[in-house]
Image 1 (tube, each protein chain N blue to C red):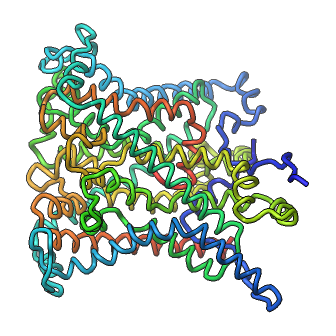
Image 2 (cartoon, rainbow over the protein chains, first blue to last red):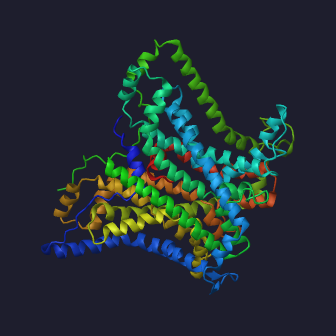
Image 3 (cartoon, chains in turn brown, blue):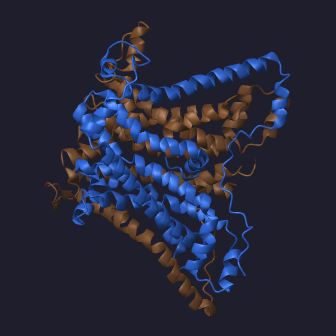
Length: 321
Length: 305
């Protein structure tokens, strides 16, 4: 079924405002009809706009205000200007969390992409039981982050966890998954990859199915090896999927919360603390909500940058293609 | 004149990909050189290893949930419980409001899903088929909400629900969760494919906008509705960060928050924790296995995990 070869494209565009250039001509003779239609339209849009306005836009503006205020329990008052942001600059935990977030992103994103593409190529080839294998790889996507993280907790538990038991059984020392920063970080990365490869594979599979098999036939006739076919046909041709996934994976990695909150709570020490867990900690554990709001605004600004890059990327591709 | 029902609903199926391979290729596989047969074996072995790695954590969750405590706490390696027992399930049902948590999750998920899907279908229709002033700008505005990370809003949303007097109630979870735009794009994209002639014909017959929506558009949108319902159910059932902030009374917890609470109370009783984790993931896994096609295409198209 070749009906859906365009899935890759649509997928990438779903997050882009590619509104068709509709012309809203208000011809004189149609004014009354347009008026009625506008009224009906707002009726259809109303519930959504009210929900978004009250529970998203209002809090967004509010968060900005709070970040300029002083925390005092729940009722923050008193304007302090940029004090909270100045505090951020000189807060070592904030920098540690930023660095951890960046490292986490830099490691998980390329690995997710590579594993996703590798598995997609594998699952797109002739393979007995392909459907079953795919299902197994998709499955972690739909499982709750908390359940997954708790699963990680006992897989990686230093004394009773199965991974250390297996290591010890095979003659290696168990690894300090909870007591040492690097090992804790690695355990979180592994769990994240387990959750995420399925999503990357889905997108890449859709991308692969949009590639015409004749291209590969031609390459084979020219004597291209499998690796050459992969390197010079597959990789460039799934470029749009890669771009889409790159942005999505960066945003997911950047906003990681459930896994770290449940598995390590940022520890040991501050070695796995990331921006979002640090913001949560300030907002709801130490109750320094203004400071938490300031961290939130920083997260927002960084997300905005990635989003802008994505829009630009999509637009240039749209105009090019 | 009733609109013709023979018009096909826009296709929303993603190739299930067991059809992606040209037959000719399979044909040739039978007489391929040895190198290719070796490569086929290697592929299969890799696939099996990957499959085992993906499955193992789930297998281990099930095993621990049904293991006696002595096994769970033992320092020896075991891959199979010494006996299968329901001890852990008794622990969580006797000591914790497990059924209540399950019920809370169901109630919140059902209400959020109903609200979100309804509201997004309405908005999607307006963006797909109605003309009105400011359409482009409003669409951009709605779209931009998808870029706002929850974490930015958590403090302000917390204050908002407190101000509204709903903090700690189901509504504190439900309203902010229902304020989501992701379904609008799927809905708009799907509804654009519905032929305008169908709508025009109904207009000529004197049907109003609401009647057209209910009697002509909605019946054509069954695959869309299925995707939206499944994705929203999955997302809401698993949601953690916001319910963690919005709920305070343990009787009102949802399953993910209950899991965390159980862990806080029982620390290292991994058997009990895994029993509850198993209960919490089973409904979604069943849904996923039953409707895999819809899940996969919905995830692929919306980018929502």
